[in-house]
Every structure is written in structure tokens, then in C-alpha cells.
Image 1 (cartoon, rainbow, N blue to C red):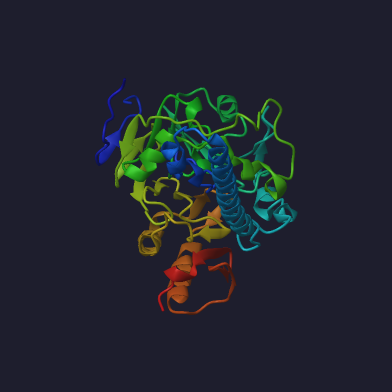
Image 2 (cartoon, helix red, strand yellow):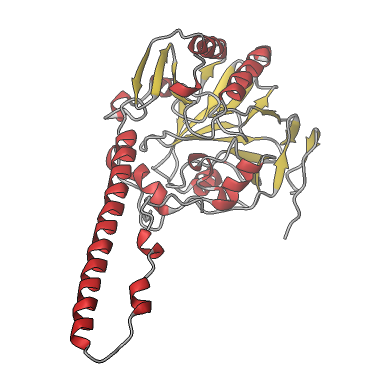
Length: 381
């Protein structure tokens, strides 16, 4: 087994390299004890005893039935609540695909590959966006090619064969860098030998654990899909396979690809282990989910809103180092000035300003070029 290496500041070489959500049906039947049975003794005149046992059995049967019904009602109520949350128009609008294709893609050079689940676009020399437009997440992975090595920044949902796409774009050795550990960014990690993430316990755990099929089903059913799944994909066995990170990154780590260097910028908030990657030479910032042109997810349980705001402010302070953002969803080529507006948007929300809609204690604030989804309890009173 390869030992992990903590990557310190400075140039590095890549040669070194279930928390399962089950229905909330607590089987209270397992907690039952049977005191009556332990006290029953056989004796003469068993007719009265049989009558007594019959009454006891009827009582136990009725009690078990009531408790089972209550448990099922509790489970059903929770499932209904979760389903309502899933159906919220604020999070997943009905017929979201009617906005596609997004205008930016008409301006980009499209590259044909054998894998039709993906659309591939050339952004710059040695920089490709690998887009999954047929599933609600609209996940985007990036292939960054240097003279000696290449990296894939995030590996998408795991629905399509990402490694095959990569092999058609470069013959160089390829490693994976995850911007964070959410399922739609690590789906094809297992296809690659070298997988790197930020040195954060939450991110490492997500990679090691993977995601089970039960959790993923909602992402390939109902309105989550608008095109058929690719040939050979099995929705019954699909899962995010666990992987062991082969190296860990820290803030300021430099990833040398040969005439192309990526700097790691820790940007916690959307998740504890989130990071961005700066290609200073080409003036491009890869943002993962810290920013994308859509509803920024500032509402989930693993979000730290103070960290999120601080990370946006950090990116704003370095605005003179990049011109474009390569985001984790929707659009792969966004002008960097939007970061200034995101910082101002968070300030307005915390000050009680901004236009929004609210549903089940979640608000969606509307801005130019992006929105913000945030829980009401996160907003300072």
C-alpha cells in the first residue's frame, strides 16, 4: 500500500504519488420484551390457562400491530417530507432542461468523442471542459494538459465513461484532483490510479466511503434526467465507488504539469474540504462548487456560511490574478468579475436585503448571473 504524502508548499510531482441514508423506520418491535411468556407454567386445569394465554396472545398481537402501524406512519411522514423537499422548485425547477443549451456553448469549440453522454469543449490550448448536460447536476470536469502530465479536475457523476473520453484527448499520464468530496464530483475517481484531494477529514472520508445506490436513485429518476442513460450503464448497481487518496493537498501547494502550474487555494464553506485551483499563467481559476452560474448551494448541513463568505472574499482579493472561472456546473467559462457581485450578494443577504422566494425554511435569492440557496436559520436577525 502506498503511503500518503502531505504536499507542502512548493512544486510537487504527481509521480508520488456508507454513510447510508436509510428510511427512518426504527423497528420498535425489536425493543419488545415478552414478560408474560416467561411467567407461564403448565399446570392442571389447563383450560383456564389456555384462555389466559389466548387473551395474552391477542393483547400482544394487537400491541405489535399498533406499534408497527405507528412506525410505518412515522416513516411515511418523513418520506413525504423528504419528497416535498426534493420537489421544491427552489432547488430543482420543473423542466430545468428547457433552458438548454446554455448560450455559452455556442461560442466554444466542440470536440467530438465516442462517449455521447458527454459534450467536450476546448476552452484554451490544453484545456477542455467535459460537460454532462443530460442530468440535473450538469456536472463539468476539466482536463488540464501540460507538457509532461495532465490532470482531471473532478470526475463528474460516474454515469458516463470519463476515462475513455480522457484517453481520446491526451496520451499523457493523467491524475485526478477533486475540488471537494460531493458525489457529483467524484463519480469516476475509481477509473484513475492517482486521486488527490485537500487535506481535510470530511473530504477524505467522502472519498473513502463512496455513495450507495439507494441515495443515488433520485438523481436518475423523474425530472433529474431528460435524455436516456448511456448504453451499458446499470442503474441498479450504480454507486460511487470508494477510493483511497494517493496524496493530500494543502493551501498553497503547487502542481507542476510541465510548463503549466496549478496553485491550490483552500476555499471552505460549500464543504469543509473545498478548494480552488489557479492557473496563473493562463489566468484561469477552477472553482468547483465555490462558484458556478446557478443557485449556489449554501443551504446543506455541511455548509459553513461564515467560511463560505470568507472564501468568496479571499477570491475577490486575488481578482487581479485571473480573468475567467471554470466552474463545477452549468457554464465552463465565466468572466471573473462575477466574484465581486457574489461577495456583495452575501453581504446583502446577511443585512436582510435582496429579492427571494422561500419554501420549507430555504430561501432562493436572485442575482444577475447566479442565485444563492440558503437556510433561513443561517441569516443573521
